[in-house]
Length: 454
Image (cartoon, rainbow, N blue to C red):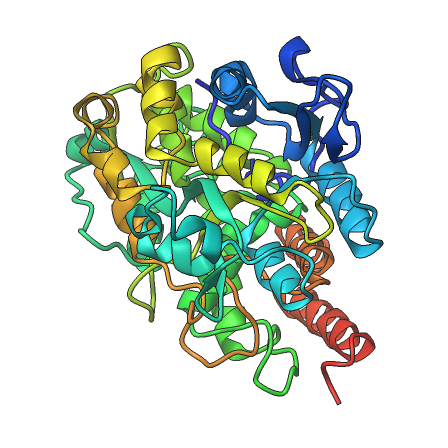
């Protein structure tokens, strides 16, 4: 199965996954949310991102419809950036086109405060949904003022994947909790130019690169802003983190300025890299014989740290219900089914256990068949997701919520800006000092225009 993650703005992907993807015949179209049609059924329209997990959901939606004869489900499926633009415009203008929308923890936090999406706590606390079974850190990331505003479809943290066989041959031992200095030492030792890179790290100028950049600057003691919304991207801590990043890329794959999740996934899976730091969802690619030459050779360690206890990368593609929906009850019936214990069982039995959306429910990790299918990485995935604290992801206090991203309306554009500056430094067209000065200036201008910085 192909992994999904937020490789391009979140896989982490701002890059379009494909041309606009149409939904399957059984669940097609993008029609507006509305009441019953001529059949008397309620039509629930779902806006979702184009990825393999959603393809699986579409295939299995016929099961939901057979159990809910009064509900028809229609999907509007788009590449991530297009989907987000379309949904944001619809919700901001109160268009009411969608009954449920797919979003991440950043939008959940921003949109809940704007009252654009419904509080789902009343729904989740009854009817057997069992919100207490949701992995606590995931539930917390989708909650505002202790109220649940979205339910997770799948989530991911970050870990350091490494070739156990290469480490053993070189006499190296991966610590239980590696530091970035450890990673640099290993990358130098394992790098063999023209044969195998010491590590693969994203370097493409997309917001997905924040999976590396922001988690590094956070653990080194940096932040995007201080409590007065003054940018600190040019601080000594951020410079130390980005200098370490650039040093690591000396032992990375060729063409690092074009490397995003797919490129690193492919390089590592084909034996071209000894280590790879990225989203936990990537393990499903590496342990699948259909896509990987290194099955069974991999170790999975927590994301590297410096001053923090854990790496802070976290993402959860989740479902929320817009306040403008006229079919909230029917929408809840669908999204609660799609994020339920029963759905995990259905996916495993119908499509295979590696297809089960990871990082959602504690109970999933107790299913024997799932444990067997994910024995190489399942518990480590659960562990790193459980260690994430998006409210306090770094060392210094900050006025924003994060987790490798910014819960701000301007967050994505700022992330892309930062990625472009660092990518330019990686390409050698500017120094790290110039890159950080440019980034700090742009971040300050954004905070001022948003009325955050006085």
